[in-house]
Structure formats: C-alpha cells, structure tokens
Length: 85
Image (cartoon, rainbow, N blue to C red):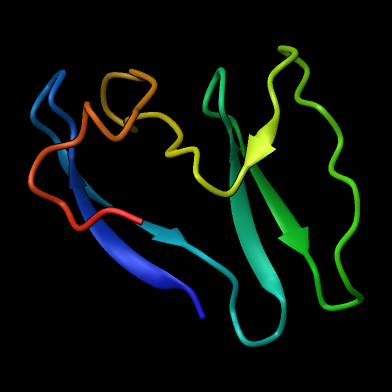
C-alpha cells in the first residue's frame, strides 16, 4: 500500500507531499535515481523489468525524485524531518 510523506527540501526549505509505494490496484510511481524523473508504473500484471531513464539512471523504488520548487535531486540525507521509507 502506498504512503504519502511530507518532505522538506534542505536545499530550498520547500515542504511538499510525495506518495511512495504501490496502490492496491498495482499502480505506483518510481523515480530515477540519477535525475529524479517520475515514471508511472502498473504492476497489476506482475513484476517486470523497468526501462532505464533517458539520462542513464535507473527507476528505483528507493529514489526520492526532485524538489518541485528548486529541482534539486533529493536523497535521504537531503530531506528534512520527514518520515522516510
């Protein structure tokens, strides 16, 4: 089941919500571990191999994406007092 997290970017201080995990229907969002691009996925038919991102990075369930305000790529060390995965 997906969880919505409130994240605070340590680069610019913007707080925003981001949803991680899979919905009951198998829908979810993965982020590139290099550039932060988001990719909607549908795992309802089972797991499959994900394509690489155009930048050469990999779509990863642990990647946090980018800040919607400043565009900084987020890592677990960069986010503030948010519950982490």
